[in-house]
Amino acid sequence: MLCALALTVGFSINYQLVMDAFSGKTVTTPGEKTAPPVTRTTSSVVTDAYPDLVELEELDELLAEGALLVDARNLAAYRISHPVGAVPMPLKELTTRLPGFMQQVPRDRVLIVYCSGFGCPDSFDLGARLLREGYQQVRVFEGGFPLWRDEGRPLAEGLE
Image (cartoon, rainbow, N blue to C red; front, side, top):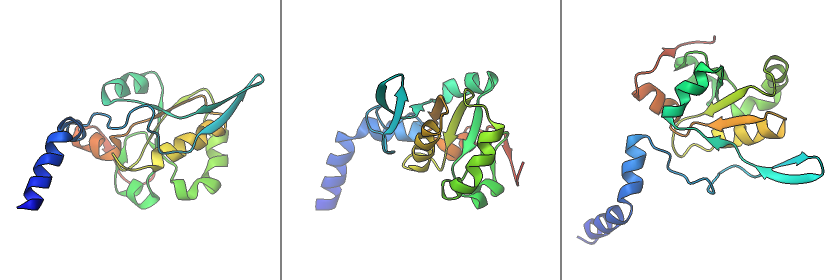
């Protein structure tokens, strides 16, 4: 009975947060980033930068303008299924994959990093690292692969 009461109180306090999570809306606020701050030097000013969030509604527009989807999940998950056009950049393989990525992808291209959905910090960590490496427009799609798939968006298998 005590557990039921605690569950009811907790749900009533966090109702909007729970509903936002189930509907695919961004759960974290702009000040709640999981990745450590990235120090960026511009002229003589040093600032901390985090990747910006992107909602599902804005995603199509950015992709139509040439943004690149970057998958921070492990390579096995990428091979099973990933959004069409996404490139693999598993966070655990970053040191070996990043040099080739940097040779092929211009620093001014918009990058949309995703991982395994809400609660997965890999997309923020990868986004922060890409900002540190000089990429200027890095966005994080918090809904990640699960939201992409659940929305019925195009998927591919294997390595592209």
